Length: 191
Image (cartoon, rainbow, N blue to C red; front, side, top):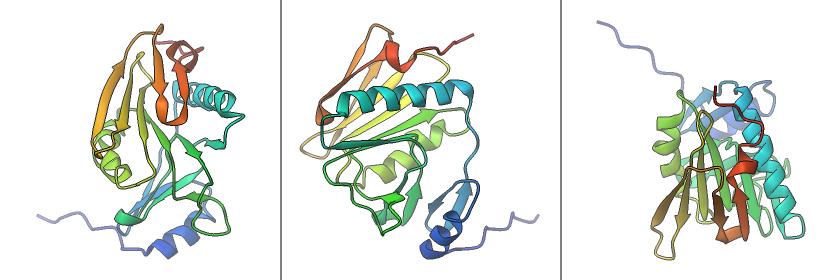
């Protein structure tokens, strides 16, 4: 019985050099680059809605909102990811003068799908928790009205709250925003 070959180890520097030239995105964890898949219509609508809502509410504050092309570096894990939505409040810190890889996100959002849900809930959240700047993590379903909000507490514990109704609002105290579930899921059909 033969085992599957392991992908070749690549350094973070090699990953970044390749990624900056690539036409498709890959995430990186401890020597391995993993190609990212495309997104559904619902996924794209929800991400657009989130970026619009967050940008509108944060327009007069020292915060920036980025869609899924902003890479995040997790130095404690030698990892690079592409969250679906990134918010940074305060001065953004980038790894270099390319300004394409952020070090200090305040809020990260991941859209759940069949192929990524276990990773987004498990290993990826474990990686994100290593970012000292991160205060909020949202997991957003695209096949039903359902958002999980994780909030970092002063003791470094994370508290989970579920939001399941279109009439709900999600308080994001760390960035002084309240998200309307109806706006997050605007124009999304669950047929």
